[in-house]
Image 1 (tube, one colour):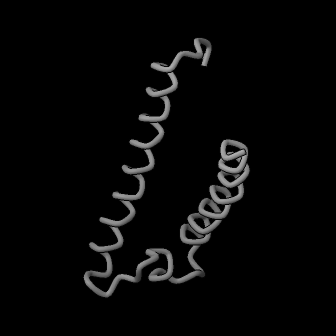
Image 2 (cartoon, rainbow, N blue to C red):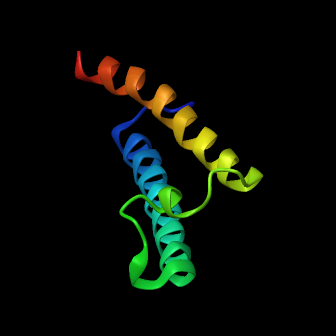
Image 3 (cartoon, rainbow, N blue to C red):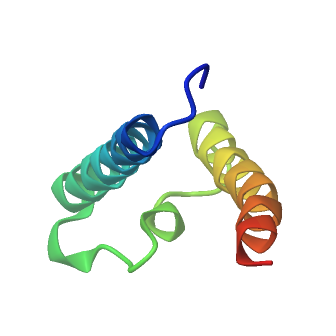
Length: 77
């Protein structure tokens, strides 16, 4: 952010939230379409952990968790 104004910050936050909502919605839709009403609360639990794409998804969630908490703790200080 070159210009650090409240409007630009709000725009960045809104875009980030939109990306998160979109990603979680798409994951939820595909999980429901794949497993129907038998889908687990965590979509990754429904897939087998031996497929490379599932392992990539698990790694992405772990990376997101590891990188998100320090940022949230910094903002909460």
